Length: 357
Ligand code: PMP
Image (cartoon, rainbow, N blue to C red; front, side):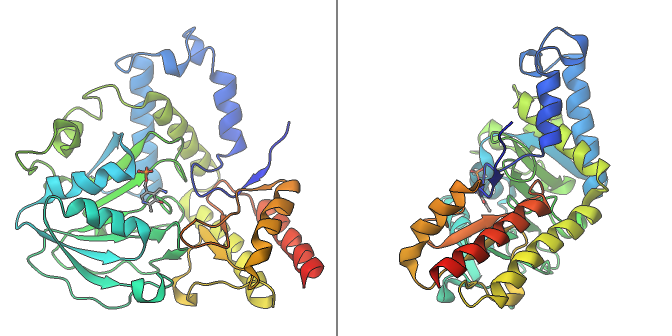
């Protein structure tokens, strides 16, 4: 069977064990004579799936009891609107602008509230995470993007926002390391990197932030709708939730987030150390702000980018092209990327450097 090392930023690779289990269970799930895709979302079998998915996620992330887990649709992008529509009280919120996704979140929130950019790294092309900022104590919330998928930066420390709820877009680093959920008011993430297939969005929300949506908030964007119905107000993305459950089981079996973090740190260190030691490749990101998940690198002679991508592809190393707004290359090494994938990339990078130096 052909399997490549897929460095895509998302949708990205899933653990082979998960795909094989899903394949085995596809036509006849637990002797029901149906696939999960064909099961009613109100059936006992699906109730078990969604209940287990939630309890596994709670266990993996140590989610406190005063938080709800919601399985919704619309991607992380839909949350850009849902957040101001649900949290609007004083009508203003603070945003830390660390890249393209933060900007999109701000642009959408501006339709509903006053957005104050309290820090930005745009002055240096988003190659670092701003260290200092002042939170308006009257702000309805502070929004951050914990991992910047396109720029390859990440918050190494979670900012303290006092009594103002911290809202985090964790789309590209959820489940990659241990975090203290109690520091956040809301954590949200599109599934298509570390959780499962695109189409599912996970929202982890402190209970006291539910039930205050603006009058004009659409029913489907109101957190109360999904909280009251156990994410079954309408038909949820059932197959995505099933695959997420398999991914959570895979994570638990390998030792949970502590072990996953150790693996991710090891993989990222291998690549960053090689880039630092090389006089051919260069990392555009400031050292203290580097992401474990998305690692951009450039070759000073940009004319070689296309050759690099093509030659890498010939060796089974896929989707290494950097985002069109940044250029160069980007290796996304999410949870499902094995260390062997990173090692294979480094072997190729060495060979390419030698041939083109
Ligand atoms: N935020 C971040 C950090 C992302 O990486 C992405 C998708 N790549 C999004 C938001 C948008 O997510 P979606 O496509 O699920 O709307």
